[in-house]
Image 1 (cartoon, rainbow, N blue to C red):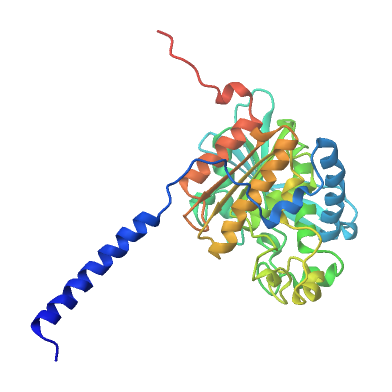
Image 2: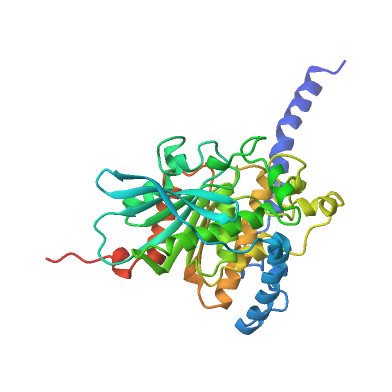
Amino acid sequence: MPTLRATLVLISLSLLLPIAARLSAQEEKKPRLRSDPPVIVSSWDDLLEGVTTKEDWEKHRADLKQRYLNLIRDQFKPERVPLDMKVHEETVIDGIYRRLYISYQVEADERAHAYLGIPLGLKGTAPAVVALHGTTAQGTKQTIGIDGNPDKAFLDQLCRRGYICIAPEHFVSGERIPAKGAYDTTAFYEKHPEWTAVGKFNYEHSIAIDVLLTYQEVDPENLGVMGHSLGGHGSYYLAAYDDRIKACVCNCGASFMRHNPDVEKLSRESWYVYYKHLRPTLLRGELPDIDIHEIISLIAPRAYLDISALNDGLPLVQRQRALMLMKIADVYDILGAPENFAFFIHGRGHSVPHESRELIYGFLDAHLKPAEVTATHLLNE
């Protein structure tokens, strides 16, 4: 057995060793030195490979646009039919705006429904916004604020800010819920086996713009789109598809294909199937020749705001979104329009919290309303 003196020596050494280790680490620790910021390299850099000028971008954009149309199989969309608009209900809300429940043709044998809000007392024309709902059972009823989450009552909130707003139903919701349930696309693909659900909702949302433009109160030069979740990526899909959109806001709208371990869900075998034709290639681990960063970039130099949450789904995937968005910002720089691009990332999950709504409506105000609306002024003393 060790003696008392040996035990004390061992205890002393055990106390001194951590101190010595810390002193040694401090001696080896290098001082922080000033330096230039490192270049951020990411897998999203392919967006601008070989592109250094505006002319380079325009050529590249034309290629990306065709890839996008191929992805959604735009060539299989039906012929446009007359709108044949009908008004089913009309209500005045709080003496502030007139709300109509309307329907219109989107295919020869198919009508879509939408709510349309027009502020009262307009002097001249007003900017107009297409407001897209997510995969909620309330659908457009949530968007007008009579059911569901009031944070997502976009039509009501926009009309109170002076916007004309149309809130179209998604094609597998509202008045057109399929026999197998809301958001089930089985019947759609039986009717249009070569088309895609993304192509279908793009097509219908573009028709919603046509509906807006039948109203003389709408300013055709100041059209926007915004939405949450399914409506969020519906927003950037529409703005990339239809150049009449001047400002676009996506709130918590779907993830990209790259780095996404759940990418095959885009072509799942049941419920909501975005791209049925991609299933064989996605199951082989192969991705299409265009991704979300390239689709969003088609909006440039028009205004785009992206709002997302780091804790909305898989954190590592959402962190990649920040790198993706920074690369899209480079496109806006090349086009000389950095002021038209913005993004906000928060930690409130799949939601539209107060600060997000303030950003959404402020961004639309800045890009769709006259400059004097958002101008600040000094006090007159």
